[in-house]
Figure 1: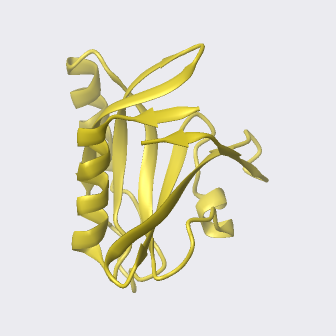
Figure 2: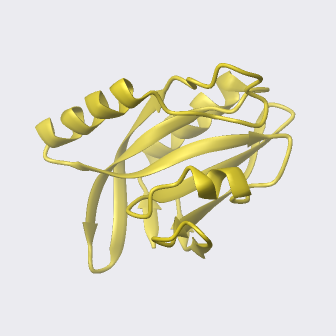
Length: 138
């Protein structure tokens, strides 16, 4: 299970709305215990994909490293990545799976006509061949 605190959730949705009709991306910072993951801070990140961004995002490795350092400095961990799907459902695409990291939760926000519609979270396996949907609370 992943639970996202209200302030962090609002920042994720705002970033997705601002990026529309392009995909947004960002990191979710927080902690993990036996009950799941708790996201307390989100960091919007630049979509570094150099082509059309309507259905693709790419994280900038240098920015990822900076966010990892920021999380550690705050006593937190990067527990997941979020991105948006403009004008389509919040599913984990084949491309999402191929570019995933099995140690993160991946939250996908469906943004329909510029407004938040729904979201889902996914946990990819270590082979990056499948991703289970995980319980998401926000």
